[in-house]
View (tube, rainbow, N blue to C red):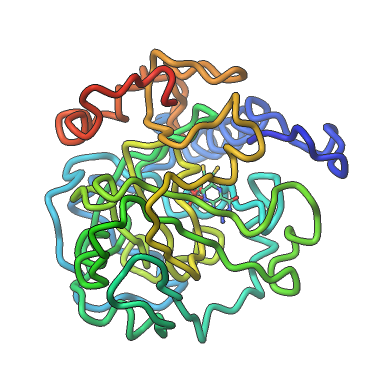
Length: 321
Ligand code: MTE
């Protein structure tokens, strides 16, 4: 994403985004030509027909289908699991898949604390047991101007929040990633302040589109995508989607988030997808969907404006980027 204040990474270690995409396109294009196929990109087909995973990981039982994203063309399992941002496992897009191979996510505890009536240290299975798992096909847009369509499996965050029962004083939620440099090799370097932290306003967290994901393509989350539990908020830039969550804290003041701490002029708290507010280093007007050649225009709130715009009535979205 950004490497200012990161003295121990040389710029030569970072693959420029454009180069990486071109390399992928060349590879998938060449394979398609070899197979005598049209260059349609590595999609698996219609969302409602094919959301079964490749069987690499444990299959999740009884997933409720939801109407979200029906008819969207999905990115392939390979795209979603090989082109990742997860600095705890390396700063290059292809590193997390490799560096997270040995990461174990069992047992896993989620600590709930702060302004809430049901605080505690929950075992993950116990934490998610009361809830039905739903499939949610969402368009995901990274601030680096690439996008994907991902068939997540998760739980509406609102259901979890209601059960945890925040006190009336709670106005925001903070999420924390695991901090354990022995298990997350990227944390041995100073590229970000660890642990990774993110936050949402409580009403954003209660929005029906916000989920905590435990799987994709019908299987448990691969480590590189944030196993065993990560946040997904599809109307916001990808960096809000904090991975491998171990702590949820209910607070009364707007929390700081990791990228805002790194570069407050580049990353804000809200991070709503907004084509008319450019990032200093990436235009946000258009995006490259992985597997496609032609850029597509980026939509306000990533195309979810009819559902989420009312959360921001009266808020200046240029100063609250
Ligand atoms: N969460 C943690 N803990 N560490 C990270 O480096 N990267 C973020 C977000 N969550 C990140 C993280 C960024 S920049 C993006 S774009 C998304 O994860 C990428 O999610 P994906 O790899 O599942 O597509």
